[in-house]
Amino acid sequence: MKKILRKLSVVIGFIILFGGLYISSKLGNSESSKNKKEDTTESTKRSNYVRSMIVKNETLASEVIISGKVIPRQKINLYSEVSGNLVKTGKEFREGILFKSGELMLNIETTEAELELQAAKSQLYSALIALLPDLKSDFPDNFKVWKEYIDSFEVNEPIKELPKTENGREKLYIGGKNIENQYINIKRQEYRLTKYKIYAPFDAVLSNASIYEGALVRSGQKLGELTHPSHYEVEATVSLHDVKFFRKGNKVKLYSEATKDEWIGTVARFGKLIDEKTQSQTIFITVNSSKLNEGMFLNGKITTKYLTNIVQLPRKLLINNSSVYTIRAGKLSLQNIDVIKVNNNQMYVQKLEDGVEVLAQTLLGAYEGMPVEIIK
Image 1 (cartoon, rainbow, N blue to C red):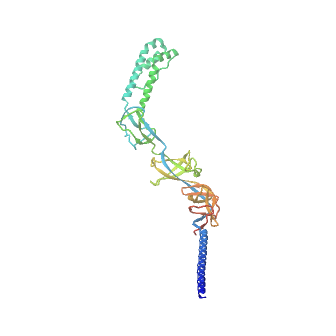
Image 2 (cartoon, rainbow, N blue to C red):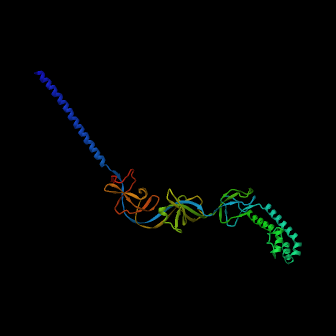
Image 3 (cartoon, rainbow, N blue to C red):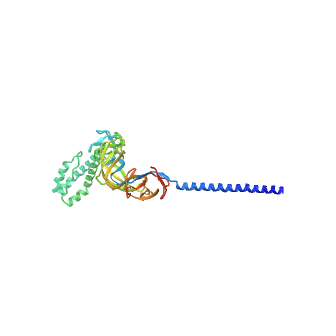
């Protein structure tokens, strides 16, 4: 009997032990599941903290900011059309030297060319003298004119125009003696002789010199570059959003951040090529000043017309060039807008109502319906 009771007590003990372990396990799993559920719920409710701004439409006087490089309006390359040694003139042919319009800049030695011209005139003179007997006998009516022309002929003076022939027979006779051909050749040499002196075509500064006094100049050789000292243009690129605010003749305030100088320029013309990547167009602004130099960079601004019902926002908030994120009921919502004008860091937009709350910062991974909480 005692053995039976002992065995029964052992069995009951095991039953109680395993039952306690089972109940404990169930309670632990239930608590863990509850904690996980609470964590999941808490994670679902968690929001992104963001900053916002309240929309207020205004009437604004906008400015278009530009920047561009200074380029000369009058710039030419100098080339020699003849050969010879360069001789000294009144001024040195050096970079930075200023020449007035019509002033002698370069003088190439002409001795050889002048001797060739004199030789050609002498040949023509001899040919004319040989014609006199025939002219006197065959064309007596015009002999006196030819005789006076020959008597006044000077080898060292510019050649005079040949006498006019009286009839077709005389014209054929003169042409057959090669007189007109020699005359035209002399006129060509006289014209070529003018190429040995090079004069400034306009008030100009020598921006580059590649030849100096005493050097041998060859035909076709580049001699230097001439630039007008005060006539310049600013070549600037403007966004297509802003090009419509520019008109030919508009005044533009220009300034240099390096020298602190200011100028007033005038819109002269528009380029026709549109940059595909930046969607911008080139404009050219004329400006006259001796303080400017080729290659300088200038900034500028032009005040445009007043814009009504406009909201000014940071440019970084623009989404896909046509919308911004607004905040409605604690969630992000895409709002279509019209971009009227864009500056460097700001944009002027329409189609936003007063009081609408706009996301005022860029948010990584933002999407339509994302829950957010505004930082007060």
